[in-house]
Length: 194
Length: 52
Image 1: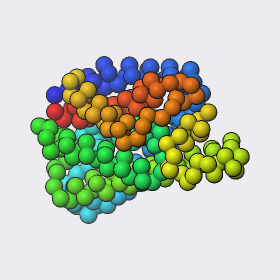
Image 2: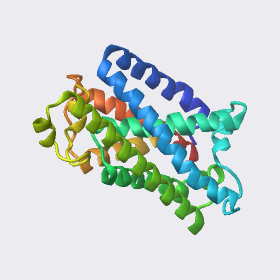
Image 3: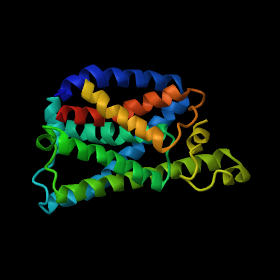
Image 4: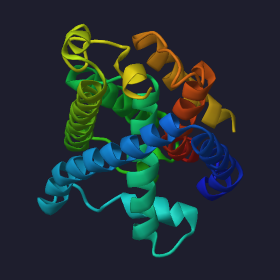
């Protein structure tokens, strides 16, 4: 078992420091990270609206997010759990999405489902996954798949809007038309950020 | 640590396989994107690693 607190201290902190240095060096990267973090946080919030429905209906016994804060040994656990979820998971995955040049609803939903597959594998095969997060059953599978699809939909949609808005600011209409609709071209993000 | 690598790099590989690696961000190069992608998936990967 890789203890979360130790890996966060010895691995995540140095990576974040270097990423910060990359951000400071490059304005386009800085802007992309800020935009991606914002979009990721909004997408995670809408995922949580869906997830809280399951909690409110008693379909899940408890909220697993404070368990992350407990694993970090930081208090109050729910605050640090949610910071990790929103900034680390939601924001971080949005940074990866944009860094890979993805945009658009279809790419977003596929990306969300891909991320969900990682969660399902973790729950199904890891010794501590279900104890640390939640029990894997039909209800939680629906919650996880639906929630990640919502996350991906919002992520892809907002990324596509940001890209098209930035394109329309910097490109003439004829050039913009050459890029098609949001999400249809893999090169959008390069144009957006240059 | 092996779990972290084992969970991070399949995600990266699949991400690149789904779509070709795009060009650089303002001339920063593919390595910048790779770095941001690896850093972006790291928090999720650490959670997975902690569960193993």
